[in-house]
Length: 97
Image (cartoon, rainbow, N blue to C red; front, side, top):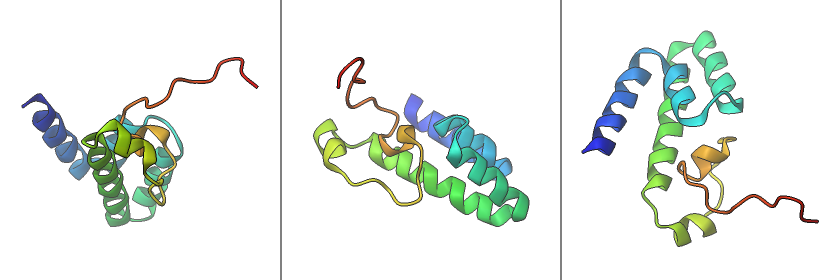
């Protein structure tokens, strides 16, 4: 129920302010700034981009870890957080060559 409620809240926020919805799933990265630019240039393109990113995020979030690890990157998505559905699939390689 909590996942459904947060998804619904995110969709409602995105309906009114698309960059805020993108910021909530990707942070302040390239996808956020692309969405800000698209929203300034036209409100409708900002919506399309935001809902596409949310679709990719939630679609990959519900996959199992083995499927998520072997999938190809979604086109036009630059945030690793969205690409992995908010999951950290592999630990960072600190100090390795």
